[in-house]
Image (cartoon, rainbow, N blue to C red; front, side, top):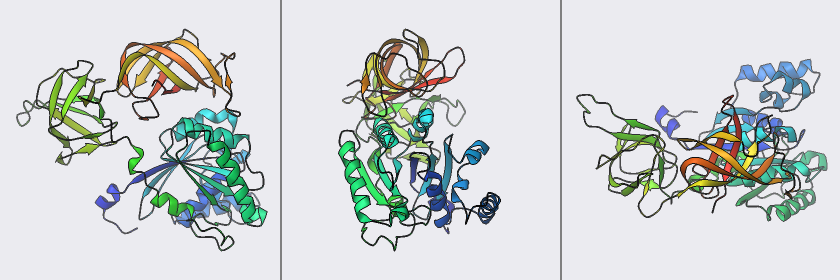
Length: 425
């Protein structure tokens, strides 16, 4: 790709995850995407060609490009989240290839939590199965803005349009019950490359774009909340040098909204107001900043602000509370303890919390609420209530994925044990 380094750095980044049942062809699809978009090196291709020959396989098994763990290659499945990076002249991409098994739900949640888009594979011969429901539910729960259903292995059903249309109809029926905003359907054959990077000659009845065309062109600019101004402070910059003797800047990543010099703002929790003096970056001052940019904000007044505080607009403030309602995905082998105490991280703020109530567990295959089942084990998803040792400044996860998410940490082991989405109104 011929481009100067600056334009390359400025290219938009799309994060997407893949999900599907075992043998639906996720790894083959990613391998095909990388190979057909010329995003792998010759030596990588030669290595998987050699591996394929050793296994006695016909042709080159492109799935070997992503199944990086030896145990994955031996079993022919994906266990952990495999991250792959590639770029085309239009966009940069980070792929999270997530496992399909129910016992790896936590890996899927981890891989998909930062995605703009989720690709869910469906085997054209099998149609919708339990895991399709589960993966769509998790995509909905995580607030992934765009979901693409790739109906794979169309070559094994003779590229029939009616098979594709039936699966599409079935998916639309249950997706309508979930909060999934933007859905697309593409009939593909990852093995043969139909509609992955190049348009299929075998499915001239399909008038839509290929998967790569969709990935390159889907609009992701509005995936961030540009309405509610939220700036969690990560670090206070005081150089105290001769050149910057009185400089006091607040560094962090904008979690929502658009900030401009001259804006009237309020610092939480103190409630003191001020005006933005400047917004500084490594390349100098800028006239406006928005999510997810990392910047340093300076104010006209010297207010006492430290890490964990939040700068917001006067007339648009987050919820401030010590009581949270959370959908939690449990990540640890040790069960969630009712009345248990955990450390909690929210944006740049640290606190401790106690589990007040376990309201229900979700059966992630049927979406039913199991109100009697309070045993929350690894890979379970449940609704809980917790109380924190200090007020947090948050929005609901639906409104802002950054200010609406928390993680729970076991204070004894320092392990991250739960990933939560705040559902307070």
